[in-house]
Image (cartoon, rainbow over the protein chains, first blue to last red):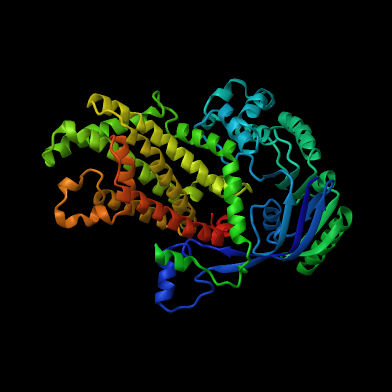
Length: 254
Length: 281
């Protein structure tokens, strides 16, 4: 049984620009006696007092404008960010997919990259080897799999990353935009695989700007506005509210 | 390093002093160690990746080390007016051990920066990346260590029971490498100017530590460079057993003291800033 529990989570996101990162800057700002916010660091409150609980069967869609805190919330739900305020409980094996080609070694062969990814996603080396033929077949890359992936086209890289990343079956799945893959012929195959991948997860959280995709995969919705929960409930109600809010803003603009 | 520590501390307003941060850090370290399947495979691939397109692969590590040692031995035995047969085995072991110390510090400093790709999208324990680094450094060191028995055989230096003392000395060095990575890895993720600073310090440490020269080459006035130099302590503790000698007993206590103080400082430090590393990278 997987579960996610957030209780009064607030998170300020420190922005470290190139200048604020250097010691010189920290020293100079002290020497000069100039008081800036937290030594040249700007804090942006990305999430404010978020409480939410997800159980097996929940398929949560996160919607909101750019900068509403969607990605930050996803990172909290995926356990990447540990918020300084509030309580977070996450139980279950987790996979958070943002970039399917994340961390690939360009000089390693396709096969090596598949093995590395599978191990990183929690398989043993032997399990990864056992899964290798199935993943290899799926990519349809054939002979290319024994070449370094620097020789691949972008489309081929995505195929490889997609096939390897969807080889495990995590209990909790957190995605920023639905991962997809490749050309038209491959897209149909990828669609079937992603359906299977998503439906085998106990809990799924997906942020997307595409309401069609959200309707296809999700049953609950959460509307974020400036880091606060504006609406949390059945998907259709949340989407309706989101459309209403967006519509109002459009009107105001016109 | 002290100034770096104080300038990184941030006002307590945004990080409430929760009593559990230390427990979480210790949990992170325990969980990280348990992920040995991942870090051992990653370390193996790291090692391969460096010598990807070459025929001899990772054995270039061994070969380039052998060439360096021969060159060093020829030049410095002439400068110091010592017989090559006496100097070469000594400098060979010395240089190989220094290689371990230097890469523990340098790679420890960049441990989180090097793994940022993974860290940005994975909730795996942060310490896992440190274990990955330690495994990679150990693996590289093992490739160099192959040269030691060869050198000893050529110069007919027999191993003794004291040689076994290398193992605890190595273990102490790796534990300190872990502490260094906890502190420097975190600081370097926050302040990107630090990695070059660290590598220059390591470079200077190489010259002021008895790697290429020994007590004999140093005037009596300068023994402080050996007696009060933490690098020298670990260097000697690993070098002497490999040459078949037992290190001075007192050095063990110094090394043990450094290790304990290091852990007592590094773990709370890591605990304090661990959650922030995700924002730094």
